[in-house]
Image 1 (tube, rainbow, N blue to C red):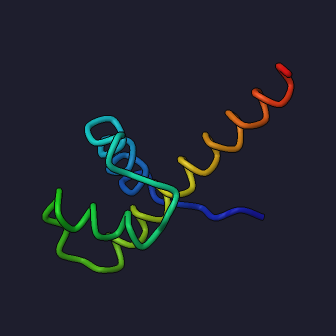
Image 2 (image 1 turned 180 degrees about the vertical axis):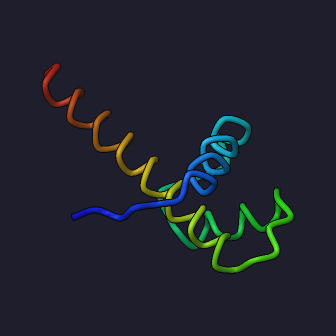
Length: 73
């Protein structure tokens, strides 16, 4: 079973990815620091949830891209 995330976490993560897509990576710790610098989220728990969701989205995109590249070859 997967994680269930609140809609406000998903909404913030999607907006950050839309605005700062080039800054984020698939590394959770780096994403935490980026979110800390570009937002004013005071709650550590909320920041970590958003960073985790951003990391998950990017990891999924990387996996899909590599899979489609392997199929093309």
